[in-house]
Structure formats: structure tokens, C-alpha cells
Image (cartoon, rainbow, N blue to C red; front, side, top):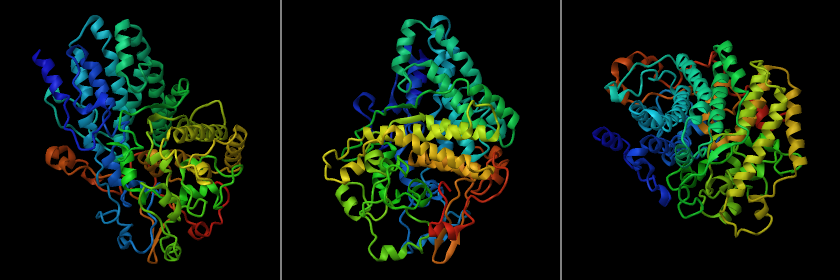
Length: 581
């Protein structure tokens, strides 16, 4: 009994001001299960942790400052002109005057918020018989989550403690930093083993155990087939990243994983306050979008690839996702922001201003001279927690096919065509969930913020157009440019950290340099720095990797120092780009 009470007490995590959920999950960080449901309860608690699938308000608020990862990856941006004097240091990735990771601490959060993994392991080790058969599945599914979060951290920090981590119950609290490639391979092997054994584990569960699983698994409702597919999708993602340093090992995992991938978007509804209310998003990431809308303008790197530098939206020509991703400007068209702050200053002086908040759609419609991300689709919406979307799988398969890493059964262009259609379905689904300002019926704005989905013929025609553009290029760089353009359009503000990882890995899509007061800047932050607490708490191990503790050392899967900025900057500024480039 004493052990059970100790485990129950250890589940309690300090609450924070943003952790406000609906009544049935008032505070998942303080959820304490019944003693006979320790494993299932700890699993549910882990699913509900902020910064995993439920994105966190705080980190979005800080990162949407104009100096965080979304801005440096050109996923979101301020409407920058020389009035923002501090951007003169935008290229400083050494002292912190430019690039910033403020409010972002996935390093510590990985170990803190995933500690239920070790606790469940302790519980499982003390069980036997049917009680064990009904409980071990939670440990395996949480292991999938731990593996995903571990490689997410490797993508941000490179070396991390992993192979001997989570041994607090054994009195081992601080361990060595492991080689990142070794971590990748260990995780990929673990994901394969779990995917192989999950069906057999499920088959041994009692009807009562299955019923509990279906209730406690708020993500996939106890559907073990979907958990297997999710594990394989993760294997696909991370094996593609590993391929640059060990193609043979990566290809073996890819070839196996692609035999059983998700057949639908894997996502689940969040138990949080209605995002259309007075304070959108409660404790989730949309509150950050609501409070910092002035840094959610869509950069040219995304906008110009959806409307091809033409301001008017042409349904049969432009990207069908454009009207549900972007808000139109006061000119009833779509305009991105440039990183050429000097070049766009005159327009701002002449009156191309904006309404800097997300609380009044009329004011935004009447004043915004640049397009923000849609308030209906994103800022005021109950966007589900996405675990994996079909469009991302399609684009990973396109890279696999283009690089010959495995036989996918389709051409790379065919996978890109699938990605555009799946992504279009996804974004119109999100827009359809939006309940914000349904009273906004004045045309043409009503149909612009909540547009009807184009016909399947139009969507298919556009998807084929992207495929044909891909098929028309032959170099690996040109192919990756188109793949990553589509990944940027699909993920945008939903997954900025994954996009930043992909940008650093592939060096695509090519970004627009920052020009500020005559200074042309091409900063390339490559990773995040370790928290300062590591020097104090794990000093011996930390000192062995201190040479990595900067913003410019590349992650292990990046094997050269090439730039992810455009060389033809003048061409880009004047809008003379070929389609899809």
C-alpha cells in the first residue's frame, strides 16, 4: 500500500496558470487514478501533458516574439520595417541579441513530463497474471510516446541523456549524454519491436481490460492497429532523417514500416475551453496565437508558393488551401510579408498598416494590408491535437522515392500529388470546425473566411499541377525544394518546430534573407542550447558535451554546412520566380 501511495503522489505535477481544461479534466497534471488503475491512469495523464500532443500556450507566446524559431524558419513573422530597431541584430546567433529560445524548454520537460513511463514500468514489474496482461499495453504505448519525444529532443539538442535515463526509482537521477545516432537507432529498433508485439499483447487482454483501455486512451480510443501504424509512421519520419548518415540501417526500417502506415489523420480532440470564447485556447497554444497575432503574418516563403506572386486568389489556378490558411487583406486579396524590411517600409509609410489583434474581425478586415493566418481556422478554433497527418506521410514517402531509400509503390511525384489532396482535405476540415464569428455574413468576406471547399476536380487538377512541376525537375536540390515547399504549406503554424528541424536537415525551402537598414543577414541557428541547470545538476556529463552548447553546431544528421537561404535574392524580391520555386 505504501508503494501505491508513493506512486500516486508522484503523479502530481505543479499546476500553472494556463492549465485550464474542461470540467471532466479540470487539471490532468493532478489526475490521480484509483489504485487498481495505476497504469491506465498514468498513461492518460501522460497523453494530457502539455508540450507533447497538446501544445503549450507559454512556449508559443514566447516563441512568437519575432525572434523565436517560427520567425527564423520563416513560418510566421512580424510585418517588419525599420521601426523595429532591434532587428539590426537579427543575425546574432551567438549572444542572444537575435535568435532566442525563450519560453522553450523541451529538454527538461521531456524528463519531467514523461516520468510516468518509469513509474508505469515499476507498476508492471509488480503485476502478474491477467492483471499484468491488462496493464502492460499502457507501458508499451507510452514507450512509443517516449521514443517520439526523445528523438524530437535529439533533433533540437543533438546529444541527450537517454539510454540510461528514467531510472529515478533506482536512485539514478543524472546520466551520461548519449551519442545522437545511437539514440536514433535504439529508438527505431524499439519502435519496431513494439509495433510487432502490440497485437499479441492486446489479444491477451480481458474484455474488462479492453473496455478500460478504450476509455483511458483518449487519443486513439484503444485502437491498437492505429497505435501500430503510429509507431510505423514515426519510424518512417526518423529513418528518413537518419538516412543521410546510415542509409542502409534507415532503409531497412523504412521498407518495413511502409507496409502498415496510417490510413487516416491521427488526431484527437482537446479537453480545453472553447477557443471561440473571450480567452481563446485556455492553456493551449491558440491562446499564444490570440495574444500575439501581430507576429502571425504569413511570410512570402509560404504565401508566394500558394498564389505565385499574384495578389488575387484564382480558384482554378492557385493553391486551394489558401483561403482557409490565410486571411484576406483589406484589399480583398492575399499578400505575404517580406523579410526585406527596407523594401516594404515605403508601403507601410504610405498606409499599408494593420490591426495588431485577433479580437475583432471587422477591424482586421478593414485595416490589414498583409495576410495573417486565419483567425477562423487557427486562432479561434478548437484545433485537434495531431499525432500524424496523412499529408506528412505522403511527403516523407516522396522523399523516400526520390532518394531511392525504399520501394514505395509510387513515384515521388505521385506521393506529392497525394499530399496536396490529403492536405487540402485536412485544412478544410479544420476550417469547418471553426465556430468563430458565424454571424459574419457580409459578402465577400463571409465566403472568404469560411469558404466552400473547391470541387474535387479543381483540387485534383491543382495536385497534378504540383506533381508535374516536381516531375519537370531532375536535381535532388530542386526536388527537395518542392517537397519542403509543400511541407511548409501543410504544417505551417501547426508544427513550426518540426518544420525548423526539416529546414535544418534538408536546407529547403530556401529562405529569404533579412534586409534591415541596408544590412543583408542570413542567420542559421542549427540547434538549441542546453538549460543552464545541466551544468549545476549533471556537471560531469554536461562538460563532455559542452562544445555542442551553442546555437550553431549542427545536429548529427546534417552532414554539410550549406546555406538554407536563397542566392538569387534580387530575383526573389522582384517576384520573377518560376512556378513552385
